[in-house]
Image (cartoon, rainbow over all chains, first blue to last red; front, side):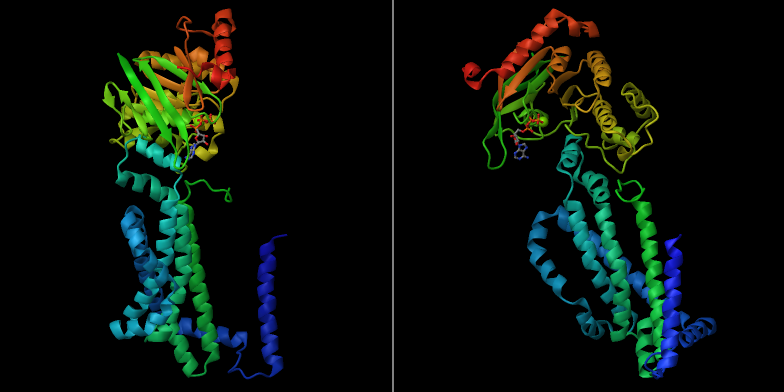
Length: 252
Length: 253
Ligand SMILES: Nc1ncnc2c1ncn2[C@@H]1O[C@H](COP(=O)(O)OP(=O)(O)OP(=O)(O)O)[C@@H](O)[C@H]1O
Ligand SMILES: [Mg+2]
Protein backbone atom coordinates (compact mmCIF):
# COMPACT_ATOMS: atom_id res chain seq x y z
CA UNK A 1 0.00 0.00 0.00
CA UNK A 2 1.09 3.51 -0.73
CA UNK A 3 1.88 5.62 2.32
CA UNK A 4 0.74 8.70 0.42
CA UNK A 5 -2.84 7.50 0.48
CA UNK A 6 -2.65 7.41 4.26
CA UNK A 7 -1.13 10.88 4.33
CA UNK A 8 -4.03 12.27 2.33
CA UNK A 9 -6.48 10.23 4.40
CA UNK A 10 -5.04 11.77 7.56
CA UNK A 11 -5.64 15.23 6.11
CA UNK A 12 -9.27 14.38 5.38
CA UNK A 13 -9.73 13.02 8.90
CA UNK A 14 -8.15 16.11 10.47
CA UNK A 15 -10.30 18.50 8.46
CA UNK A 16 -13.40 16.42 9.16
CA UNK A 17 -12.58 16.40 12.87
CA UNK A 18 -12.06 20.17 12.81
CA UNK A 19 -15.40 20.72 11.06
CA UNK A 20 -17.22 18.45 13.50
CA UNK A 21 -15.51 20.03 16.49
CA UNK A 22 -16.40 23.62 15.52
CA UNK A 23 -20.01 22.69 14.70
CA UNK A 24 -20.62 20.63 17.85
CA UNK A 25 -18.62 22.59 20.43
CA UNK A 26 -20.61 25.76 19.92
CA UNK A 27 -17.48 27.94 19.98
CA UNK A 28 -17.91 31.26 18.26
CA UNK A 29 -16.82 31.28 14.63
CA UNK A 30 -14.82 34.40 15.53
CA UNK A 31 -12.49 32.19 17.55
CA UNK A 32 -12.24 29.24 15.25
CA UNK A 33 -13.98 29.14 11.88
CA UNK A 34 -15.25 25.97 10.23
CA UNK A 35 -13.09 24.62 7.40
CA UNK A 36 -15.98 25.12 5.01
CA UNK A 37 -16.10 28.83 5.91
CA UNK A 38 -12.35 29.11 5.38
CA UNK A 39 -12.57 27.40 2.00
CA UNK A 40 -15.43 29.69 1.04
CA UNK A 41 -13.41 32.80 1.90
CA UNK A 42 -10.37 31.40 0.17
CA UNK A 43 -12.29 30.49 -2.95
CA UNK A 44 -14.04 33.83 -3.00
CA UNK A 45 -10.79 35.72 -2.56
CA UNK A 46 -9.14 33.85 -5.37
CA UNK A 47 -12.03 33.95 -7.86
CA UNK A 48 -13.11 37.52 -7.23
CA UNK A 49 -9.44 38.31 -7.18
CA UNK A 50 -8.85 40.60 -4.21
CA UNK A 51 -6.25 38.17 -2.75
CA UNK A 52 -4.09 38.03 -5.87
CA UNK A 53 -2.42 41.46 -5.55
CA UNK A 54 -1.42 40.56 -1.99
CA UNK A 55 -0.04 37.19 -3.01
CA UNK A 56 1.83 38.88 -5.83
CA UNK A 57 3.36 41.53 -3.59
CA UNK A 58 4.51 39.08 -0.95
CA UNK A 59 5.98 36.83 -3.64
CA UNK A 60 7.90 39.73 -5.16
CA UNK A 61 9.15 40.92 -1.79
CA UNK A 62 10.25 37.44 -0.95
CA UNK A 63 12.00 36.90 -4.28
CA UNK A 64 13.75 40.27 -4.14
CA UNK A 65 14.80 39.83 -0.53
CA UNK A 66 15.89 36.27 -1.15
CA UNK A 67 18.01 37.04 -4.18
CA UNK A 68 19.53 40.16 -2.65
CA UNK A 69 20.27 38.44 0.65
CA UNK A 70 21.58 35.23 -0.94
CA UNK A 71 23.61 37.10 -3.56
CA UNK A 72 25.24 39.47 -1.12
CA UNK A 73 25.69 36.74 1.49
CA UNK A 74 27.40 34.49 -1.05
CA UNK A 75 29.69 37.26 -2.33
CA UNK A 76 30.64 38.30 1.20
CA UNK A 77 31.31 34.66 2.05
CA UNK A 78 33.64 34.33 -0.93
CA UNK A 79 35.37 37.60 -0.09
CA UNK A 80 35.91 36.68 3.55
CA UNK A 81 37.11 33.19 2.66
CA UNK A 82 39.61 34.55 0.17
CA UNK A 83 40.85 37.32 2.43
CA UNK A 84 42.01 35.92 5.75
CA UNK A 85 42.74 39.37 7.15
CA UNK A 86 39.21 40.61 6.52
CA UNK A 87 37.79 37.41 7.95
CA UNK A 88 39.70 37.69 11.21
CA UNK A 89 38.93 41.39 11.39
CA UNK A 90 35.19 41.03 10.88
CA UNK A 91 34.56 37.67 12.54
CA UNK A 92 33.53 39.02 15.99
CA UNK A 93 31.10 41.40 14.30
CA UNK A 94 29.60 38.65 12.20
CA UNK A 95 29.05 36.53 15.28
CA UNK A 96 27.53 39.49 17.11
CA UNK A 97 25.23 40.39 14.24
CA UNK A 98 24.03 36.82 13.96
CA UNK A 99 22.52 36.82 17.41
CA UNK A 100 20.71 40.11 16.83
CA UNK A 101 17.07 39.24 16.11
CA UNK A 102 16.84 40.76 12.64
CA UNK A 103 13.07 41.29 12.88
CA UNK A 104 13.65 43.59 15.82
CA UNK A 105 15.32 45.94 13.38
CA UNK A 106 12.03 46.28 11.49
CA UNK A 107 10.93 49.49 13.18
CA UNK A 108 14.31 51.05 12.44
CA UNK A 109 14.02 50.17 8.77
CA UNK A 110 10.60 51.79 8.69
CA UNK A 111 12.25 54.98 9.93
CA UNK A 112 14.89 54.67 7.22
CA UNK A 113 12.92 53.37 4.26
CA UNK A 114 9.33 54.24 5.15
CA UNK A 115 6.30 51.95 5.19
CA UNK A 116 5.91 49.60 2.25
CA UNK A 117 7.88 47.25 0.13
CA UNK A 118 11.41 48.56 0.61
CA UNK A 119 11.63 47.93 4.33
CA UNK A 120 10.13 44.46 3.96
CA UNK A 121 12.61 43.59 1.21
CA UNK A 122 15.49 44.87 3.33
CA UNK A 123 14.41 42.81 6.35
CA UNK A 124 14.00 39.72 4.20
CA UNK A 125 17.39 40.25 2.59
CA UNK A 126 19.03 40.69 5.96
CA UNK A 127 17.51 37.47 7.26
CA UNK A 128 18.63 35.53 4.16
CA UNK A 129 22.11 37.04 4.25
CA UNK A 130 23.39 35.14 7.27
CA UNK A 131 22.71 31.51 6.36
CA UNK A 132 24.32 32.12 2.98
CA UNK A 133 27.34 33.88 4.47
CA UNK A 134 27.90 31.16 7.01
CA UNK A 135 27.37 28.24 4.67
CA UNK A 136 29.52 29.79 1.96
CA UNK A 137 32.33 30.27 4.46
CA UNK A 138 31.98 26.69 5.71
CA UNK A 139 31.59 25.23 2.23
CA UNK A 140 34.60 26.99 0.78
CA UNK A 141 36.75 26.36 3.80
CA UNK A 142 36.47 22.61 4.18
CA UNK A 143 38.12 21.52 0.96
CA UNK A 144 40.01 18.25 0.83
CA UNK A 145 43.67 19.32 1.36
CA UNK A 146 44.77 16.81 -1.25
CA UNK A 147 42.56 18.53 -3.84
CA UNK A 148 44.12 21.87 -2.94
CA UNK A 149 47.52 20.29 -3.48
CA UNK A 150 46.35 18.94 -6.81
CA UNK A 151 45.37 22.43 -7.94
CA UNK A 152 48.67 23.84 -6.71
CA UNK A 153 50.48 21.08 -8.57
CA UNK A 154 48.60 21.95 -11.75
CA UNK A 155 49.60 25.58 -11.37
CA UNK A 156 46.03 26.87 -11.00
CA UNK A 157 45.58 30.56 -10.23
CA UNK A 158 43.63 31.64 -7.16
CA UNK A 159 40.65 32.52 -9.29
CA UNK A 160 40.74 29.12 -10.98
CA UNK A 161 41.01 27.37 -7.63
CA UNK A 162 38.00 29.36 -6.43
CA UNK A 163 35.82 28.82 -9.47
CA UNK A 164 36.80 25.29 -10.36
CA UNK A 165 37.56 23.74 -6.99
CA UNK A 166 36.22 25.63 -4.01
CA UNK A 167 32.80 26.70 -5.25
CA UNK A 168 31.90 23.39 -6.94
CA UNK A 169 33.09 21.39 -3.97
CA UNK A 170 31.33 23.68 -1.47
CA UNK A 171 28.13 23.78 -3.51
CA UNK A 172 26.21 21.17 -1.46
CA UNK A 173 26.81 23.17 1.74
CA UNK A 174 25.99 26.45 -0.01
CA UNK A 175 22.75 25.02 -1.37
CA UNK A 176 21.78 23.84 2.11
CA UNK A 177 22.15 27.49 3.12
CA UNK A 178 19.85 28.53 0.27
CA UNK A 179 17.23 26.08 1.50
CA UNK A 180 17.35 27.58 4.98
CA UNK A 181 17.20 31.07 3.47
CA UNK A 182 14.05 30.23 1.46
CA UNK A 183 12.18 29.24 4.60
CA UNK A 184 13.43 32.29 6.45
CA UNK A 185 12.59 34.57 3.52
CA UNK A 186 8.89 33.78 3.80
CA UNK A 187 8.96 34.43 7.53
CA UNK A 188 10.87 37.64 6.84
CA UNK A 189 8.44 38.87 4.20
CA UNK A 190 5.28 38.08 6.20
CA UNK A 191 6.52 39.41 9.51
CA UNK A 192 8.11 42.39 7.76
CA UNK A 193 4.65 43.20 6.45
CA UNK A 194 3.20 42.83 9.96
CA UNK A 195 5.51 45.62 11.01
CA UNK A 196 5.65 47.93 8.06
CA UNK A 197 3.56 46.70 5.16
CA UNK A 198 0.64 48.42 3.49
CA UNK A 199 -0.25 45.43 1.36
CA UNK A 200 0.77 41.81 1.02
CA UNK A 201 -0.25 38.67 2.86
CA UNK A 202 1.24 39.75 6.20
CA UNK A 203 -0.45 43.14 6.04
CA UNK A 204 -3.72 41.38 5.14
CA UNK A 205 -3.43 39.22 8.25
CA UNK A 206 -3.12 42.37 10.37
CA UNK A 207 -6.09 43.88 8.53
CA UNK A 208 -8.14 40.69 9.07
CA UNK A 209 -7.20 40.77 12.72
CA UNK A 210 -8.56 44.32 12.91
CA UNK A 211 -11.86 43.09 11.49
CA UNK A 212 -11.87 39.98 13.73
CA UNK A 213 -12.21 37.96 10.52
CA UNK A 214 -10.68 34.66 11.59
CA UNK A 215 -11.87 32.84 8.44
CA UNK A 216 -9.81 35.25 6.34
CA UNK A 217 -6.84 34.80 8.66
CA UNK A 218 -7.00 31.05 8.20
CA UNK A 219 -7.37 31.47 4.43
CA UNK A 220 -4.26 33.68 4.36
CA UNK A 221 -2.45 31.18 6.52
CA UNK A 222 -3.18 28.45 3.98
CA UNK A 223 -1.97 30.62 1.12
CA UNK A 224 1.28 31.40 2.94
CA UNK A 225 1.83 27.70 3.62
CA UNK A 226 1.25 26.85 -0.04
CA UNK A 227 3.56 29.65 -1.14
CA UNK A 228 6.26 28.36 1.16
CA UNK A 229 5.86 24.82 -0.11
CA UNK A 230 6.09 25.95 -3.73
CA UNK A 231 9.27 27.90 -3.06
CA UNK A 232 10.76 25.08 -1.06
CA UNK A 233 10.03 22.53 -3.77
CA UNK A 234 11.47 24.85 -6.40
CA UNK A 235 14.66 25.13 -4.35
CA UNK A 236 14.89 21.37 -4.08
CA UNK A 237 14.51 21.02 -7.84
CA UNK A 238 17.19 23.67 -8.36
CA UNK A 239 19.45 21.93 -5.89
CA UNK A 240 18.97 18.54 -7.56
CA UNK A 241 19.82 20.08 -10.88
CA UNK A 242 22.91 21.91 -9.62
CA UNK A 243 24.17 18.95 -7.64
CA UNK A 244 23.27 16.29 -10.16
CA UNK A 245 26.98 15.84 -10.83
CA UNK A 246 27.99 15.57 -7.21
CA UNK A 247 28.46 12.44 -5.24
CA UNK A 248 25.30 11.84 -3.31
CA UNK A 249 24.98 9.22 -0.66
CA UNK A 250 21.22 9.23 -0.24
CA UNK A 251 19.72 9.77 -3.68
CA UNK A 252 20.01 6.96 -6.18
CA UNK B 1 74.37 15.48 -15.52
CA UNK B 2 71.52 14.82 -13.10
CA UNK B 3 68.05 15.78 -14.13
CA UNK B 4 66.53 15.76 -10.65
CA UNK B 5 68.81 16.51 -7.73
CA UNK B 6 67.75 16.38 -4.10
CA UNK B 7 70.48 17.80 -1.87
CA UNK B 8 70.32 17.31 1.87
CA UNK B 9 66.56 17.84 1.96
CA UNK B 10 64.85 17.66 5.37
CA UNK B 11 61.30 18.22 6.41
CA UNK B 12 59.39 18.30 9.70
CA UNK B 13 55.65 18.74 10.04
CA UNK B 14 54.44 21.34 12.50
CA UNK B 15 55.51 20.38 15.99
CA UNK B 16 57.11 17.07 14.98
CA UNK B 17 60.57 15.70 14.41
CA UNK B 18 62.23 15.35 11.03
CA UNK B 19 60.11 13.12 8.83
CA UNK B 20 62.57 13.46 5.99
CA UNK B 21 66.12 13.71 7.23
CA UNK B 22 68.93 15.08 5.02
CA UNK B 23 68.12 13.05 1.94
CA UNK B 24 70.48 13.18 -1.03
CA UNK B 25 69.31 11.63 -4.27
CA UNK B 26 69.90 12.24 -7.93
CA UNK B 27 68.08 10.92 -10.96
CA UNK B 28 69.59 11.08 -14.42
CA UNK B 29 67.53 12.11 -17.43
CA UNK B 30 65.06 9.43 -18.51
CA UNK B 31 65.86 7.18 -15.55
CA UNK B 32 63.24 5.30 -13.59
CA UNK B 33 63.89 5.23 -9.86
CA UNK B 34 61.82 3.46 -7.22
CA UNK B 35 61.49 4.30 -3.58
CA UNK B 36 60.44 1.62 -1.13
CA UNK B 37 60.09 1.64 2.63
CA UNK B 38 57.77 0.82 5.43
CA UNK B 39 54.56 2.70 5.97
CA UNK B 40 55.15 6.06 7.62
CA UNK B 41 58.85 6.29 6.79
CA UNK B 42 58.43 9.53 4.85
CA UNK B 43 58.12 8.47 1.19
CA UNK B 44 55.09 10.64 0.42
CA UNK B 45 56.69 13.58 2.19
CA UNK B 46 59.90 13.21 0.17
CA UNK B 47 57.91 13.02 -3.05
CA UNK B 48 56.02 16.20 -2.16
CA UNK B 49 59.30 17.97 -1.43
CA UNK B 50 60.59 16.90 -4.83
CA UNK B 51 57.38 18.23 -6.41
CA UNK B 52 57.71 21.61 -4.71
CA UNK B 53 54.49 21.07 -2.75
CA UNK B 54 56.35 21.12 0.56
CA UNK B 55 59.29 23.47 1.12
CA UNK B 56 62.29 21.62 2.58
CA UNK B 57 63.35 22.97 5.98
CA UNK B 58 66.93 22.32 4.90
CA UNK B 59 68.57 21.51 1.62
CA UNK B 60 67.13 21.95 -1.84
CA UNK B 61 65.66 20.30 -4.92
CA UNK B 62 66.85 21.10 -8.43
CA UNK B 63 65.28 20.02 -11.68
CA UNK B 64 67.33 20.64 -14.82
CA UNK B 65 69.61 22.76 -12.70
CA UNK B 66 66.84 25.11 -11.57
CA UNK B 67 65.79 25.18 -7.93
CA UNK B 68 62.23 23.99 -7.31
CA UNK B 69 60.47 26.36 -4.95
CA UNK B 70 56.90 25.86 -6.11
CA UNK B 71 55.13 23.22 -8.21
CA UNK B 72 56.14 23.39 -11.86
CA UNK B 73 54.19 22.43 -14.91
CA UNK B 74 56.84 20.03 -16.20
CA UNK B 75 56.29 17.81 -13.15
CA UNK B 76 53.45 15.30 -13.15
CA UNK B 77 52.27 14.05 -9.76
CA UNK B 78 50.12 11.03 -8.95
CA UNK B 79 48.79 11.25 -5.41
CA UNK B 80 48.50 8.26 -3.12
CA UNK B 81 44.70 8.57 -3.30
CA UNK B 82 43.07 9.24 -6.69
CA UNK B 83 41.92 12.79 -5.77
CA UNK B 84 39.42 13.10 -8.61
CA UNK B 85 36.87 15.90 -8.74
CA UNK B 86 33.49 14.30 -8.02
CA UNK B 87 31.52 16.79 -10.10
CA UNK B 88 33.49 16.22 -13.30
CA UNK B 89 33.26 13.28 -15.67
CA UNK B 90 36.23 11.00 -16.20
CA UNK B 91 36.94 12.87 -19.43
CA UNK B 92 36.95 16.29 -17.77
CA UNK B 93 39.03 14.98 -14.88
CA UNK B 94 41.71 13.74 -17.26
CA UNK B 95 41.60 17.00 -19.23
CA UNK B 96 41.76 19.16 -16.08
CA UNK B 97 45.51 19.90 -16.27
CA UNK B 98 45.05 21.07 -19.86
CA UNK B 99 41.88 23.06 -19.29
CA UNK B 100 43.50 24.98 -16.42
CA UNK B 101 46.18 26.16 -18.82
CA UNK B 102 44.30 26.84 -22.04
CA UNK B 103 41.24 25.91 -24.08
CA UNK B 104 40.95 22.19 -24.77
CA UNK B 105 41.74 21.32 -28.40
CA UNK B 106 40.57 18.30 -30.37
CA UNK B 107 44.13 16.96 -30.18
CA UNK B 108 43.88 16.89 -26.40
CA UNK B 109 40.71 14.83 -26.62
CA UNK B 110 42.43 12.33 -28.89
CA UNK B 111 45.29 12.06 -26.43
CA UNK B 112 42.82 11.60 -23.60
CA UNK B 113 41.01 8.76 -25.38
CA UNK B 114 44.35 7.16 -26.15
CA UNK B 115 45.47 7.34 -22.53
CA UNK B 116 42.15 6.07 -21.22
CA UNK B 117 42.22 3.07 -23.51
CA UNK B 118 45.83 2.45 -22.49
CA UNK B 119 44.56 2.42 -18.90
CA UNK B 120 41.80 0.00 -19.90
CA UNK B 121 39.05 2.51 -19.29
CA UNK B 122 37.38 2.61 -22.72
CA UNK B 123 33.70 3.44 -22.52
CA UNK B 124 33.93 5.00 -19.07
CA UNK B 125 34.71 8.54 -20.25
CA UNK B 126 31.25 9.92 -19.50
CA UNK B 127 31.03 8.46 -16.00
CA UNK B 128 31.56 10.29 -12.75
CA UNK B 129 34.22 9.19 -10.25
CA UNK B 130 31.66 7.76 -7.83
CA UNK B 131 30.51 5.40 -10.54
CA UNK B 132 33.98 3.84 -10.78
CA UNK B 133 35.74 1.20 -8.72
CA UNK B 134 38.73 2.18 -6.61
CA UNK B 135 41.20 0.75 -9.10
CA UNK B 136 39.49 2.48 -12.01
CA UNK B 137 39.70 5.77 -10.13
CA UNK B 138 43.43 5.40 -9.60
CA UNK B 139 43.89 4.68 -13.30
CA UNK B 140 42.02 7.87 -14.17
CA UNK B 141 44.39 9.74 -11.86
CA UNK B 142 47.38 8.24 -13.68
CA UNK B 143 45.93 9.26 -17.06
CA UNK B 144 45.47 12.78 -15.70
CA UNK B 145 49.13 12.98 -14.72
CA UNK B 146 50.25 11.73 -18.14
CA UNK B 147 48.12 14.00 -20.33
CA UNK B 148 50.51 16.96 -20.17
CA UNK B 149 53.48 14.71 -21.07
CA UNK B 150 55.54 15.89 -18.09
CA UNK B 151 59.31 15.61 -18.17
CA UNK B 152 59.35 14.38 -14.58
CA UNK B 153 56.79 12.01 -13.15
CA UNK B 154 56.41 11.58 -9.40
CA UNK B 155 54.12 8.68 -8.54
CA UNK B 156 52.94 7.73 -5.06
CA UNK B 157 51.91 4.07 -5.01
CA UNK B 158 49.82 4.48 -8.16
CA UNK B 159 49.13 0.77 -8.60
CA UNK B 160 48.36 -0.07 -4.97
CA UNK B 161 44.62 -0.51 -5.60
CA UNK B 162 44.97 -2.85 -8.57
CA UNK B 163 44.85 -6.61 -9.01
CA UNK B 164 48.05 -8.42 -9.97
CA UNK B 165 47.19 -8.88 -13.66
CA UNK B 166 46.08 -5.31 -14.31
CA UNK B 167 49.05 -4.09 -12.39
CA UNK B 168 51.48 -6.05 -14.54
CA UNK B 169 49.85 -4.72 -17.69
CA UNK B 170 50.03 -1.15 -16.48
CA UNK B 171 53.63 -1.57 -15.37
CA UNK B 172 54.54 -2.54 -18.92
CA UNK B 173 52.47 0.32 -20.38
CA UNK B 174 54.09 2.79 -18.03
CA UNK B 175 57.61 1.57 -18.85
CA UNK B 176 56.86 1.76 -22.54
CA UNK B 177 55.38 5.24 -22.30
CA UNK B 178 58.19 6.63 -20.17
CA UNK B 179 60.75 5.07 -22.46
CA UNK B 180 59.10 6.68 -25.48
CA UNK B 181 58.84 10.10 -23.89
CA UNK B 182 62.18 9.88 -22.06
CA UNK B 183 60.36 10.67 -18.83
CA UNK B 184 62.31 10.83 -15.60
CA UNK B 185 60.39 8.97 -12.90
CA UNK B 186 60.44 8.65 -9.13
CA UNK B 187 58.03 5.90 -8.20
CA UNK B 188 56.97 5.06 -4.64
CA UNK B 189 55.77 1.54 -3.97
CA UNK B 190 55.37 -1.01 -1.19
CA UNK B 191 55.96 -3.88 -3.53
CA UNK B 192 59.61 -4.94 -3.77
CA UNK B 193 59.11 -6.97 -6.96
CA UNK B 194 57.40 -4.01 -8.58
CA UNK B 195 60.31 -1.77 -7.64
CA UNK B 196 62.86 -4.18 -9.13
CA UNK B 197 60.79 -4.79 -12.27
CA UNK B 198 60.30 -1.08 -12.97
CA UNK B 199 63.41 0.57 -11.63
CA UNK B 200 66.87 1.35 -12.87
CA UNK B 201 67.69 2.09 -9.29
CA UNK B 202 65.90 1.37 -6.02
CA UNK B 203 66.17 3.37 -2.82
CA UNK B 204 65.13 1.95 0.52
CA UNK B 205 63.95 4.56 2.95
CA UNK B 206 63.74 4.18 6.70
CA UNK B 207 62.75 6.79 9.24
CA UNK B 208 63.29 9.65 6.87
CA UNK B 209 66.68 8.55 5.55
CA UNK B 210 67.80 6.62 2.50
CA UNK B 211 69.32 3.46 3.96
CA UNK B 212 70.08 1.53 0.86
CA UNK B 213 70.79 2.36 -2.77
CA UNK B 214 70.70 -0.43 -5.30
CA UNK B 215 71.33 -0.37 -9.03
CA UNK B 216 69.13 -2.84 -10.88
CA UNK B 217 71.21 -4.14 -13.76
CA UNK B 218 68.55 -6.20 -15.48
CA UNK B 219 68.34 -5.80 -19.24
CA UNK B 220 65.66 -3.60 -20.79
CA UNK B 221 63.05 -3.93 -22.14
CA UNK B 222 62.01 -6.29 -19.40
CA UNK B 223 59.38 -8.91 -20.03
CA UNK B 224 57.41 -11.05 -17.66
CA UNK B 225 59.85 -13.95 -17.74
CA UNK B 226 62.42 -11.82 -16.00
CA UNK B 227 60.30 -12.00 -12.86
CA UNK B 228 61.16 -15.68 -12.53
CA UNK B 229 64.88 -15.34 -13.21
CA UNK B 230 67.49 -15.92 -10.53
CA UNK B 231 68.97 -12.45 -11.05
CA UNK B 232 65.59 -10.84 -10.44
CA UNK B 233 65.05 -12.78 -7.25
CA UNK B 234 68.54 -11.97 -6.03
CA UNK B 235 67.77 -8.28 -6.52
CA UNK B 236 64.50 -8.62 -4.59
CA UNK B 237 66.26 -10.42 -1.80
CA UNK B 238 68.84 -7.68 -1.52
CA UNK B 239 66.13 -5.03 -1.12
CA UNK B 240 64.25 -7.24 1.29
CA UNK B 241 67.35 -7.67 3.43
CA UNK B 242 68.02 -3.95 3.38
CA UNK B 243 64.51 -3.36 4.70
CA UNK B 244 65.02 -5.91 7.45
CA UNK B 245 68.31 -4.48 8.59
CA UNK B 246 68.21 -2.82 11.94
CA UNK B 247 68.89 0.91 11.78
CA UNK B 248 72.26 0.66 13.48
CA UNK B 249 73.85 -1.63 10.94
CA UNK B 250 73.75 0.71 7.96
CA UNK B 251 73.46 4.06 9.56
CA UNK B 252 77.12 5.02 9.25
CA UNK B 253 77.32 7.03 6.05
N1 LIG C 1 50.14 16.47 7.49
C1 LIG C 1 50.90 15.84 8.42
N2 LIG C 1 51.04 16.38 9.65
C2 LIG C 1 51.81 15.77 10.58
N3 LIG C 1 52.44 14.62 10.40
C3 LIG C 1 52.34 14.02 9.20
C4 LIG C 1 51.55 14.61 8.16
N4 LIG C 1 51.62 13.79 7.09
C5 LIG C 1 52.38 12.76 7.45
N5 LIG C 1 52.84 12.89 8.72
C6 LIG C 1 53.74 11.97 9.42
O1 LIG C 1 54.95 11.93 8.73
C7 LIG C 1 55.45 10.61 8.64
C8 LIG C 1 55.74 10.24 7.21
O2 LIG C 1 54.54 10.29 6.46
P1 LIG C 1 54.48 9.91 4.93
O3 LIG C 1 53.12 10.17 4.47
O4 LIG C 1 55.59 10.59 4.22
O5 LIG C 1 54.75 8.34 5.01
P2 LIG C 1 54.79 7.28 3.83
O6 LIG C 1 56.15 6.72 3.80
O7 LIG C 1 54.28 7.87 2.58
O8 LIG C 1 53.80 6.16 4.37
P3 LIG C 1 52.78 5.24 3.56
O9 LIG C 1 53.60 4.19 2.92
O10 LIG C 1 51.91 4.68 4.62
O11 LIG C 1 52.06 6.12 2.60
C9 LIG C 1 54.42 9.72 9.29
O12 LIG C 1 54.90 9.34 10.56
C10 LIG C 1 53.20 10.57 9.43
O13 LIG C 1 52.54 10.27 10.64
MG1 LIG D 1 52.61 7.62 1.46
